[in-house]
Amino acid sequence: MEHLQNLKIMIKVMVIVLHCRDSSADMTRKLSVLVGTDVTLSCLFDKLSKLAEWSTLTIEWNMLDRHAEKSIVYTFEDGKAHGNRDGSVVDTMRLLESDASLQLRNVTVGDEGLYTCRIITPVVYIETTSLEVLARPSLLLPEKAAVTEGEEKTIQCDITGFYPEKLAVTWHIQNGSHTVPAGASHLFRVCTEMAIHNPDDTYSIRSGITVHSSAVRDGEMCIICQVEHQTYTQPYNRSVKLTVQAPAQPLYSAVTLISVTSVISLLLVTLVIGSTLLLYRHFFEAPPSVSEISQPSIIYAQVPSDLKCTIHGASQRELKVKWLRLRSRADSAVQSESVSLLVSEDLSEQACLQSDDRHHTSVLTVCLTVAEDLTKYRCVVLCRGKSFSRETTVQVKVEPSFLQISSIPQIPKVEKLLVLCCRVENFYPQHVDLEWSRNDGEQVHTVTNFGPFSDHNSLYSVWSEIQLVMAREDERAVYTCRVYHSSFPPLGYKDVLYHINTQGTPPNVMFINCEPRCPLLNEELTLHLCIKDFCPEDVSVTWTKDGETIHSGVFNTPPSLNINGLYSIFSFLKLTPNNDDRGSKLRCRVVHSAQREPEERLFTLQLTDGC
Image (cartoon, rainbow, N blue to C red):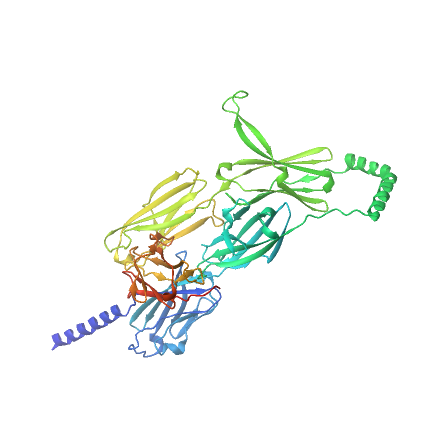
């Protein structure tokens, strides 16, 4: 009898263990949301679990942000709710319906991360949601601008408040019905600055185009600033109308001649007084003060930067400011090989003087290359027969253009070797530090570094590698490679993350776009589809028209590895529609090993006579 009782107890324990094991959700949902909106993170637990009372229910919402830092967002324990983020709410009435979904109001970039819902009823249930936060950029561009005949005009496009940082800016010129890239002509110069990190974690960037009046045909031109960003399904355009205006002509009249005669007469009367004042100012007035040359905290290669020299205590007509660039040149005929000559280059015509009463700032704008690192600049101020000289040395930086962690194999396996490689490429100067850590804060000390290596452009690259035998508890762990370099703004580093995923990541299939937007009869068009953020890299893409597979005109780009360790490709279809193709159904089918089922995108071919 006692043996039978013990057997019943063991069976109950096994049922509870198996139920707890099956109650944890393995799938990670993915959500994308715009900054400033509200979002609900779903968490529906087992409806068969009966709640005896509120005290038996425990809810924990944890969040792992993009910097691999873990925080508690919301808890419900002993019948009491605690929200650590303003605007985080779980509807207690819906808990009775087994719904512990978390509502986040007024989402910011800081809310991006991996959210985990853990419920104890006392059965344990775990569900995860990956939240991607996007911020759509705002563009500021004047509607109209004018350039003086024979001169140049710079037009600036300010792009603010976007996230993520990746954004492309291009300029186009429209003359009549033809639109061409601005880079196709030497009459246009485009300069785009590096993105600036805003306090709210969004980014801003400025891009400018300089146009010579000779490039404007028929006195008028349309200039387009085009922005490509993840928040736009297609490139976003703003345009400015540029016109040519005639130079100002001097006006002479009888009134002007009388005024000039009067001024000359007054000058003769005040000559003695003026001479006396000049002598007094020359011998007795205090000399002007000249500040040291100021420069930006970071000067990036190929980005315009201002060097400023400020003068106080003098009038503008007394001043003459010269700017010199000092270069080293060995001259063996005059000196030994160990000594160099400083050769000066006059840049005064490139500088401008900004005056306010007796306070003046001379500004020299430079756009340097890596080869001009550690160049010296001298500002010489001439005032009342005296000379004041200031010097500064400019250090040029290049922020890495490539930061990425790749893995071998692409899909990690438990109890197998996993190699993670962090690649940091195209930076300057060469000194760089890399640190590895896990999401639990544990530092990785067994690291192998390769480089830095230099290329023909004097830019450097470095690789850092760690190896580990993946344990069961490493699944869904996050490894971070923190890169320290002097080109990064404060805090002076950037983090690259790698999320261990043994199941693979299904692709994010975008919508089909058409170029041109309004297809025309008997004119070639291109359909293209972006397939992004998937792993492993093998993916199958098939195009069909009205149910029949298309073999010609299809082109797929090779998979490219993104900074998040996932892959992306573009698929293109070129065709020339005829009259029979009106209303045809064009489908693109994407098949990947991590999908539950294939995904399709549909494009209906509507032919028009023009937009």
